[in-house]
Length: 111
Length: 111
Image (cartoon, rainbow over all chains, first blue to last red; front, side):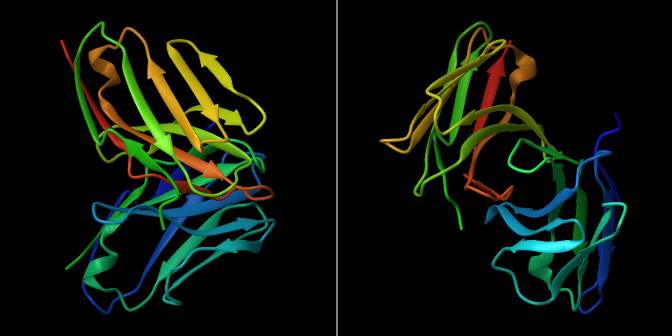
């Protein structure tokens, strides 16, 4: 099976812009989770989607949003970018309550 | 917020030696997982241990779990230079795929 894919791999934006990141899970996996990784805060959970419904949400401002499509592909959006949003954004897919399979991540730099 | 705390934060050993990393967590869990990350890339799942298990093996990896102490350890035997990476423990609570990560241990294995 193909692994989790994320696009784009690298992204440079300026403050105030918005960005959309995409994640395609492993075939058959209906749960998709997003995580933010920064040197200061480490790996933090953003949200989880299952069958197109947000099932769980981390402690992030409303500028961070996401959705999942009927084919389980997921997107996350960050509006009004701030310098502190620079991070590696990781997507993971799973069969519920089992190990998660991570994509390579999208490296977002906000200037 | 971080659930787990890994110890040590950094570990430097020679090839052939064993590496032991410890993880402590705060709340009750459904399972605990260990992941490896090479230099800012995606996370690779290593092993999952459920709350009713005490020990698990996978190749050169041995994981223990003590739910009474809310702690786990990862032992890598006969380390290789290719084991150089950051290692994270992550906990999952009942009913959710969401993972809460520790800050990780950076392992350096010198030839």
